Amino acid sequence: MFIEARIKLTAWYLAIIMAISIFFSVIIYRGATFEIDRIQRIQILRHPLGATYVLDSDVLRETKQRIVLWLVMINSSIFIISAIAGYFLAGKTLEPIRTNVENQKKFISDSSHELRTPLTSLKTEIEVALRDKKLSLSNAKVQLKSNLEDVNKMQRLANYLLKLNVYEDGQKLPMTKVDLKEIALDAVGKRKIKTNLKKSIVAGNKDSLTELLTILIDNAIKYGEGKEVEVRVKPKGVVEIEDHGIGISDEDLPHIFDRFYRSDKSRGTDGYGLGLSIAKSIVDLHHGTIKVESKLGQGSKFTVLI
Ligand code: ADP
Image (tube, rainbow, N blue to C red; front, side, top):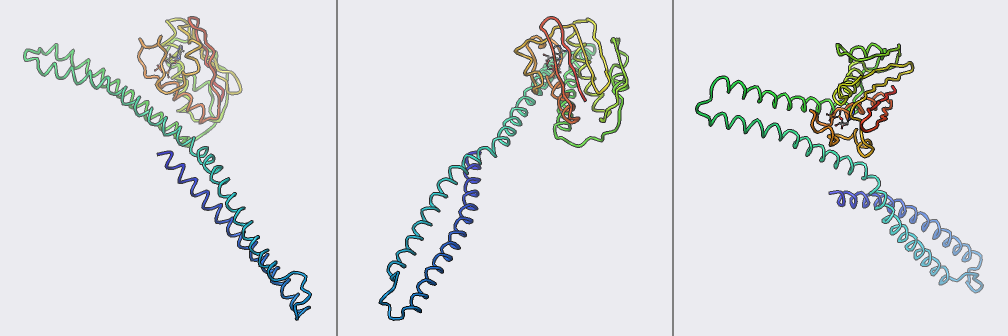
């Protein structure tokens, strides 16, 4: 698909360049032959008998032919150079689109895979229950509870996917002046977390920033091994969320913001590996930065600058 598009784009580049080149070649040829004809006319006027022509008509005809030859050679060189450069440039132009399409494909395949797991379990459980002729009411309730868990999982995944779509779409969110201290208080909610919150006014979208801090706080608790979690808001739009839990290895660190990425150590906990991708998209929408410092077994510190 991309090879075909690359060749088509190269053909378009070439067609445009050659049209311009041929247009100017015709003008150059017309100009040059006009001058040659003028010289010929002047010679005829000055020496009507033709005996003392400085340039005879054969030389002039040959000059015209040589001009044509030169122009053909120049146009052929332009054609070859443009074809090579055009093919290269078309590749460069299409590269971001190609990467994007590949990412989308991977995203669709990962999402389907994640959806298939709870769906398969749901289907199997329902089939087994239907086959059980002596299924008691209490067993049926246990069954339904387990089904509900699977449905909740799928709903959570669908919500994550929808959010990712909204934030990664780069849609303009309404921005107002917001206090990160208030947002952090909202995100912490009733959870027992150490806080050190200073007033910090930034231009941002309240709901998405609350979502961002909620994701980071949820992770700090989830991977915090029950140890202390601290949220700090500093002036000039800085928020830090620190835990003393499992930490992140150096191999995992570069990937944690990738969609569906989960470290091996976190496989035992609930999650889809989408929280930090959403967090990163929200930070990007605010033209901010998100950094993480972490040591395996010692904990992690996420620093957001809005
Ligand atoms: P999820 O938590 O659902 O797996 P996230 O996108 O929020 O997805 O996080 C991606 C991965 O980054 C997690 O699976 C985990 O390995 C790692 N991670 C994120 N936050 C922390 C943290 N505070 N401590 C240790 N590891 C973390």
